[in-house]
Image 1: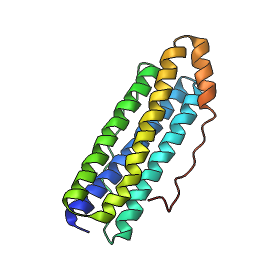
Image 2: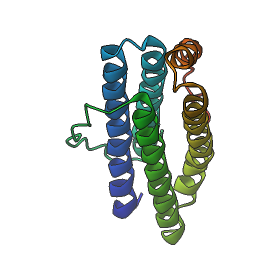
Image 3: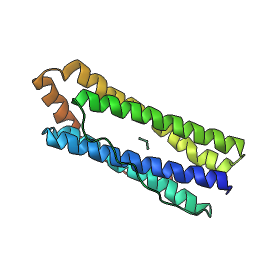
Amino acid sequence: MKETIEKALNAQLNAEMYSSYLYLSMEAYFKSINLDGFANWMNCQMQEESAHARKFYDFINQRGGRVTLTTIDGPETEWDSPVAVMEATLAHEQKVTALINDLLDLALDERDHATNIFLQWFVTEQVEEEDSVNSVLQQLKQTGASEGGLFLVDRELAQRTFTPPSVTAA
Ligand code: FEO
């Protein structure tokens, strides 16, 4: 594996760990305002990001590269409202999508076919991620303005469970 690719994959591993940390922080925010369903949703999101980081970790090793862990930036800790959190989540996922696209461009430039194929899973995943965040955001905007509406959304988000991505789906 080329050094440029190894470096970029390690940077993405760090970005996924940051995402996990950010969602853990959002979970803590929701806990602090007693929205346990939202907190559960963020907990699933946090686990998902950790699984994404693991995929990069495993792939770097499989390719004979060296995983190098670096400092994870501190996430934000306060938001003005549940809507503000979901807006920040959507903006964050859009940023991650751009990072994945840049990484894919690099793999194509370097003619690294294995990395290209590996990243295809993330391209699809990002479409799903943005869609699921956006649907919570829209639901929140439509029904969450009142306390009763917020309670209903919270109850629904309490149902989310985390399913680890298949180890073979690379
Ligand atoms: Fe790992 Fe939510 O992107």
